[in-house]
Amino acid sequence: MHADAVTAQVVTVDRGRFGCLLGGFEATGDDLVVTAMKARELGRTAVVVGDRVGLVGDVSGAPGSLSRIVKVEPRSSLLRRSADDTDVVERVIVANADQLAIVTALADPVPRPRMVDRCLVAAYDAGLDPLLVLTKADLADPAEFTAQYAALEVPWLVSRRSSPEAFEGLEEIREKLAGRVTVLVGHSGVGKSTLVNALTGAERATGRVNDVTGRGRHTSTSAIALRLPGGGWVVDTPGVRSFGLGHVDPDRLVHAFPELEAGTDECPRGCTHDEPECGLDAWVADGHAGTSGAARLESFRRLLRAKAGQPDH
Image (cartoon, rainbow, N blue to C red; front, side, top):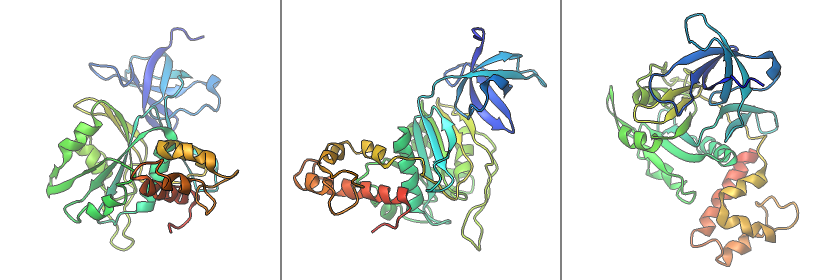
């Protein structure tokens, strides 16, 4: 069925209309983005930025033209969140990415480690490589913040303003994103859209932090995939105030800690891995998880608490 469908990849979603890049992210040459709508036969099938799709109809991209999405290819990854930790209904953010860049400011607004932890849980659950991108290092030293993630072995990069128009650290970030499909997630006001503009040459709207609440104003209103000049793609997403993880099975989270995973065989039935009877304590104490095992176990438990909405000890 629809053997003549043209391959494309969704780069924008706006009120039932989808911007689809012919040939997908791997295409070279001039980017032709075709406007499409979802075919009725797809029913309630969700179509999101990053989806590989099949198009039929007018794929000329001419003004006023409209094609139809008739199939959605299997996804290699799916980044999701829920409205809150008790809601198991997932909200799909983007499909087919391979890296999640968690953008947080070191000051103005102050960093929110628990939000970062939640994004890390979502990255591990989706099978994405996490990356911390720390902005506004001209306002605060990153050392104290990054020390919290040393045991997790999450790579991190720093950017700072050297002038109102220029960034330091931009080239290092470009190198880390090159050749990959990277989703950028962060709460409002951290400079995410400013960073996207500097990386891609786009003109995404930017805002400032509210002087009263200390929180940023939402500037990006929908996800959009943008090509990087040196190769690769970034997906800019709307700023988030919360990141619910109700859809995440805690048992999947341990897969991101392979040195601990085998130790769960020693746990009692129904173990939460954050209780006195947990078998992981003895596993680590016996040296099975290496010299950094204790720190890795505490980081794992911190993520479990973040997922459960519990305070860290």
